[in-house]
Length: 279
Ligand SMILES: C[S@@+](CC[C@H](N)C(=O)[O-])C[C@H]1O[C@@H](n2cnc3c(N)ncnc32)[C@H](O)[C@@H]1O
Image 1 (tube, rainbow, N blue to C red):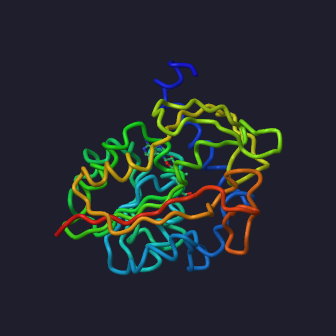
Image 2: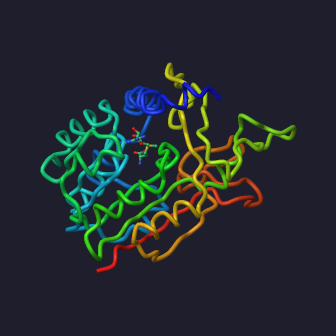
């Protein structure tokens, strides 16, 4: 690992995400068909868990180019999406305009850690929402949890779904002799992980010029403990043997669109939770 790369995490990661936006907007990227038809769908795990959003004021952290934010707006939420990628926020605003949702969905370009300064709306959201490949980009998980709590109304809830940190221990970059993902990142190490990977999770044909990224593996107890220490009360936590992207080559895609283990359910692949700010 290069310490210089790790110290440069924000610029490296933003360059990679800026480049990914164009990749994801191509026909080989995200399927925007249902959203454009007025029936945007979230991933099946979220669909089963997120509940009614009609009439809610929602803050979507790390919203990428806003596909999920706009799905919630189509269901009657009023949403604010925040992401540090300028390309993502430009695309989100364009998409909102095309879908006639600019009055229900507003997009803000800002680093997650700057959100309390940039969005002068503390304690004003009924639902703070973030999902799929989000906490791995954040160095300070305790501060993330404080920011989530900062924006929730008393009685408001936080919904989170992401890859399970135990699954991040393994990677195809460290494949073992029988082709299974091998040990890659120690669960409790907490040091930045510098990755060099030209591939994209949504478009296997893409070759990213900005290959280097800096990521973190946050143990589940840091994520949940951070939320509890920030004053939230855990409603529930679920572990799942499925994930929305092909996290390991050996996973198989099922009819629900998610990627599952082909045989035994070796490890949880995803985790989701709901926590609430007390009234
Ligand atoms: C995997 S995407 C989130 C997935 C999203 N639900 C989707 O539409 O697929 C991760 C997002 O986090 C954003 N991001 C990464 N680090 C960030 C930071 N420090 N502040 C704000 N956004 C960040 C990236 O720009 C990217 O859009």
